Image (cartoon, rainbow, N blue to C red; front, side, top):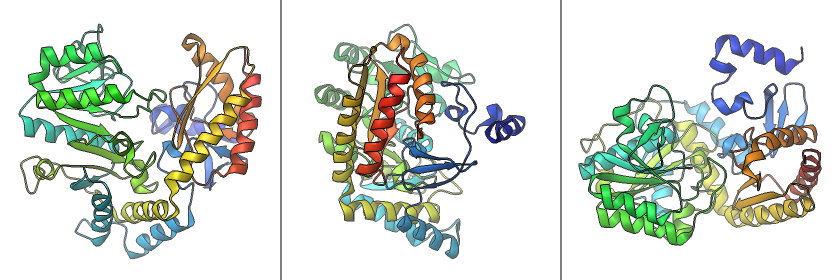
Length: 418
């Protein structure tokens, strides 16, 4: 039994499925999950000492790469000074002031420990502010594992939603309306039939949890318009796209102003940090100022606050968003060239710092991806272990690394092309 299998066997005895988040179990790709011991820059090093170019990057927070020296110093300093206080401290204040000064639609911000908490709390505000029961979400968007958000469309009709997880009651599922992405007719029908009951429309403006699904700007603008006309709040889930695709996320790129926005990943520099932010009058509904209760023992943990601020300050100083966009574009152009001539064509979708490779024939995509994933592993590349997860770049992925990676992925694609 190899070292990875031995560790996974032990893990299955003490942890559900042997993992602490489902995608890590390799359920979509088969085989035994790899166990990693260290990481640096654009690389993961497994417990046997083998090095992989990493395109999972902890699913998004490591915009500077693994173990960036400046972020590491900030985290080490935080640990030396005391890693949790349960009291007021200046570090969350510094990060909050940095964000509020640069993101006009974030007039107030509250830090939590995950994107799930952020989305759950934003919707609680929306219901309190509008005194309405329902929310509208979209197929293909993921907003964490709060009960009201683990809902999918039922028979294709908005309002006939069903839970996508056991343990979510029908009474909760009924308060979540679900519509398809990029379907103006369906969107307008939802507002026509239920607009007066909708407290909030929650949307990933760049859906990146079921593949990378850029939306038409005209459709996104129509979502915002219909929400405002109906008196519903517009909530952007920018847990992935925030501070990655641009300093102001997709809202900046689209020139759309949400009422509330959810952040995570990048703002913690790799530590467990989430946040919800938005209009001052809405955020002032949150306790202790207002009647909407939300609390957290480790919210605004000083280590994450200082690591997050170090990350954002470095990105700003280096104009990292411009560099990341240019490198992503060049890398995905190389990939398209490397995939030319395959018997079964591949599509490469990209946004700054993000990419998604998939077969143009969705019926064969899952089986193909399992072969492609393991072929990429054999060539020293670690991709997210699911055909529905996107790949992430960081500033540590320099041109030399990306050129080598594109060549290796081209070889892997040919080996999996059947």
